[in-house]
Length: 383
Image (spheres, rainbow, N blue to C red):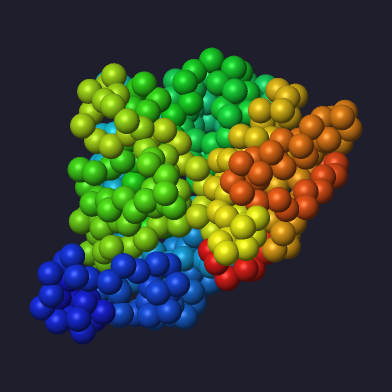
């Protein structure tokens, strides 16, 4: 890392003494973390002009938190990334037609066509879900990778394709989405855990998500007092153009215990819970304790357990001590009352008693941003 200004400034210290960083830290001094010394404004200007440095690619995240991240990768790193994901996800006994359904194209994916290993087609969600479905039918992929909201749309509209493999990516995979997708396509939906910062996990043939510990070092930071909820701090040894070292991700993972039937020694993950800054922080009933944290899974599960007819919802912390639940208009009002009671009970078990409101309104799918069913909209300064 001696070629990277930030680490050169730290001097000769062991890796374990390097500071733990987050997205804001890197974006604040982007030029100090990349090999070319490019500042964030310079990279944004390149993206706007559709330019890339020779031998490199630049791009950005979708920015679900309002903080859009940048990446810089070399051509060599693009093919390392491709090789890693192909080895973990795709059988290569015969050629594969892979459809990538995402809101933004990247030359990362073009590496597949350049390698002549795969035929890859990018479907731009910016053109709308109907256009993506039509392109899917014309392409007839053997593999589809996309966010759960898109895969569910293809299932609900009975899009006539028959992929052999399907991967959920880019968003939290909630149980109702998985159920609808798997039932229509008659397959086991697998997951790819990937972010602007790198590729961090892929599901095996048994559907178990395994961390990519053979390419990335994970420090698993406990969340609260939980025995199985963690936030990953990652060091990606495949990245040189933009160093990712001791970088705290904004995700909460639930670890699985025991060995997966596939036999992999890589750490298994039961589920990606959601974003850590979408945990709710509510006043404790005991005023000597400042705040109670409710992770997204607690809120999501309390709502879904009320009735199987609940296939979509939004739950938000909108004030310091107020939660709002939005449900579909076609649900009976009695279900809304039961949802409110269930959320109150979940809060009570955690030692808090917020006001819980609920209402009904349409929740159309948006393709310009990631779907977040659990969201902390209150800026308490605690997350």
